[in-house]
Image: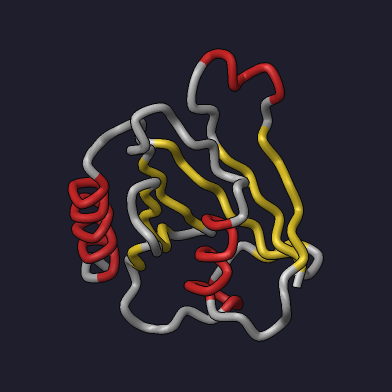
Length: 123
């Protein structure tokens, strides 16, 4: 599976080579959680001094929070999400990583979780 990645910049110096796009080839059949975990462990996301960068990852909807100090991503959707509900273009899964500086990843997770709950139950 081809995964098209885009991430935010983490500092002005990081803007030099923006946009931060990459394509990863991963085995077919991986779960979304496994895909996000592999991206997080690949070195694609910028690490920051202090070791507390916080990211969310989405593909049409927020999927997970990734924190530099965590070993694994924390998934926002507790049920399995099929790729048919995600951003697929020409058989490429598109993932966008949003940078939240050094904000507490548990707070970012809670905010995104509440937003998802409201959007699911408002219509």
